[in-house]
Amino acid sequence: MKFFIKTYGCQMNVNDSEKMGHILEKRGFSAADNENDADIVIINSCAVREKPQEKIFSFAGRLGKGKKIIVAGCVAQSEKEKILERNPSINYIVGTHQYYHIDRIVDEILAEKSRGDHPVKAQFSKVWQEAVPDIGARISRVSGYISIMEGCDNFCSYCIVPFTRGREKHRPFENIMAEAEYLAAAGYKEIILLGQNVNCWGDREKNMKFTVLLDRLAAAPAVDVKWIRFITSYPGYYDDELIDVMARHEKIARNIHFPAQSGSTRVLMKMNRIYSRDQYLEIVRRFKKRIPDITFSSDFIVGFPGETENDFGLTLSLLEKVEYENIFSFVYSPRRFTSAFKLKDDIDPGVKKQRLYRVQELQKNIQLKNNKLLIGKTIDVLVTGLHPKVEGEVIGRTVNYRVVNFESDTPVGEFTRVLIERVGPYSLRGVEKR
Ligand code: SAH
Ligand code: SF4
Ligand code: F3S
View 1 (cartoon, rainbow, N blue to C red):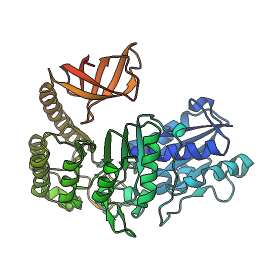
View 2: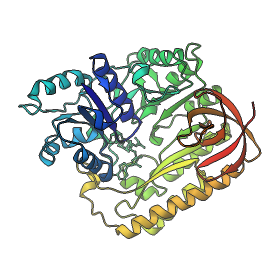
View 3: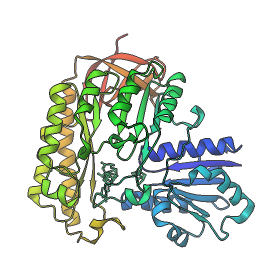
View 4: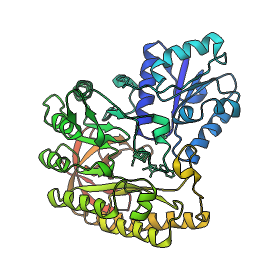
């Protein structure tokens, strides 16, 4: 009996898929290379915008007959029975807090009880549920994901995540340390701490906050990795100690994903974000003053209800001021359950599309300009993979998470030095200098 997990969505979904794969392998099932070779297909879904949500139905629709189909993850959590109504060939719904039982659920499905009385399991858990995927169940042997908290209590007005991941649950300190040591001992070069509100993590029993966790991870001899990253930080929970800890430890990569969403305070307030444009810029300024080589990345939503040309101009000017290393930008997508859902989605689709294009063009030029400053410099690069098409080529990443292409026989997972010769907006090209 073979399974295949198709993952949509954010890194936490990827990590959840790793956990499910691990649990199923322990139960004696084996992973198929693709959905066609699998008897059981698990679709780990994302509900954050309409487009990714719809993808699960087209994917399920393309699957051949005779397979058992499970929808897991965020759409499973928010839409529940509705999914079964829409596509009768889907057998089972497994919410975001149920995949720890995926082995039992698969057993049940195989015993042909799949569409019995209870094909929907989607109750929230109030407590952290521990699962650590084996190395063999992970997508990378170089960068290891470590989930440290789940859920969100912020209720940004556009966002479905609090309804798919529930209230915040924080993982105990020891468990995080143990997973970090496990990955380091297995040769991982980078660990990436995950949470919807990662900088909000706390071990209440030990009275520890996120900056203490980072400090302890970066100082622990047994967490012998080169880079520690964390996503996603909420700018509303800013803490000056984060700058201190990062300044103290070079191991903490000099790149923060710090989603602004908009450059207009008026829109930010309507989004229920708790910081203003000026507060956001002040935090960025403090970071840059203390850690001059730090770079930021961000997410932006364009076309939020009531966004004027002036509001949008403020988003463009924020991009120019911060000079992000990278951004992800999206057209606003109304989501059921959220408070913005009752606002009139009043921006013309053409205008939304155009704003998205303008944000992306501006960012492209900023990236190109800043990447050009790297020409002639020799920088540290972590080899993350072989080029899929070109023999002898590898793909690597800089500390700022920029992609680098070069010819090399340095094994995947090793660091090397690369002299940058040519650049584009999204990647760098160079020659290895060992
Ligand atoms: N916890 C993170 C965001 C997680 S969702 C944070 O607070 O920043 C990932 C990104 O999807 C968000 O940053 C936002 O830019 C985008 N997003 C969320 N809901 C959206 C919606 N309804 N329409 C368009 N984009 C949305
Ligand atoms: Fe969504 Fe806001 Fe929570 Fe991020 S902080 S997950 S955008 S509600
Ligand atoms: Fe999507 Fe759920 Fe992540 S909605 S962005 S997979 S938390």
